[in-house]
Image (cartoon, rainbow, N blue to C red; front, side, top):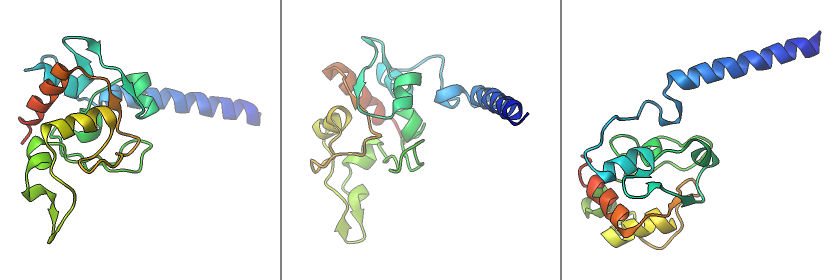
Length: 162
């Protein structure tokens, strides 16, 4: 009797989880768009390039390998991050271009948090997982295998985030 109840409970849990997951929009959390203004925006939202298709990556969360997705899942539609990632401990950073490259955004009181990013340092963060001071980013940050053109596309898109 206890085993039967346990099995029924587990089946109901799986069913309600699947229904809730679907209602939330799956892994994309309702972030899907039907059209994109640029390849950089498509990559940001989906992890898929117009040029090469799904972008491979090293490291990063296991659920990303299973369900796919792009930058938007962790950094959000606005690029401001700040919300914990599923099964992670680090808060995703604000990756708006202005926030990464502006002198004003890198100071906490009188002390500078970290160096400003250049385009090349942003590309290195995306592909190698290293911050502007050559320190490793959290393991929840995928190390994306992007072409130079795809990296340029993403940076151009980050410039549009306000």
